Image 1 (spheres, one colour):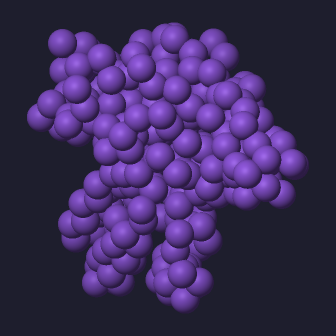
Image 2 (tube, one colour):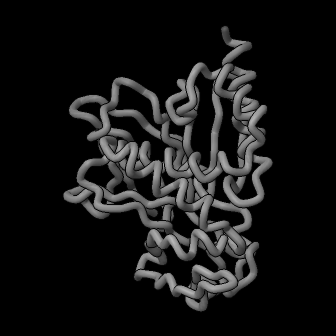
Length: 245
């Protein structure tokens, strides 16, 4: 059984790592899979692929019923020059399409449903070098304190991310992963751990539900924290508390 779980985790990690425009990095160990919540090449992200993320948000909305929408938040990578995020702009662009996607103060944008842009095979494009930036789905339920995260919101972000990612994975590989994990919902695989980008440097992250507390792994830079999505001891309304540097 452990061998099957390792093979499932390794295949999932390899599939996502191979994508040109989804996961930034992956790390697989025995019985565990880690997927980084961001993108490697966001310069030319097909609009049709991003619509898969919107569809996933709608179909899995019960994970975060008090979240009005999914947004897509941009962040800079280590190689980006200082101030790179300040000059970034995002557009929905095609042969007959040119729609600005304004960035909010948190560098996130909302993606409209536009049938003409879909028919035009438009892309979500940046005005800067693709290697400087990553993106991540951003789901925020009303009533959650600004310095905390809700577990169900992150579970829904995973569904959005994987829905976009699956567009890049060949059918036979998807079928193999479905068979090994016994599910088409890869985010529900028992050993799936999602690494989430933090805008602020964090010293620690703790998953909390009543008296139950679980310390989460934080990377050495304090910019990523790992969330065990399928720990059934913690419901969707469990919160993640942060201590910031």
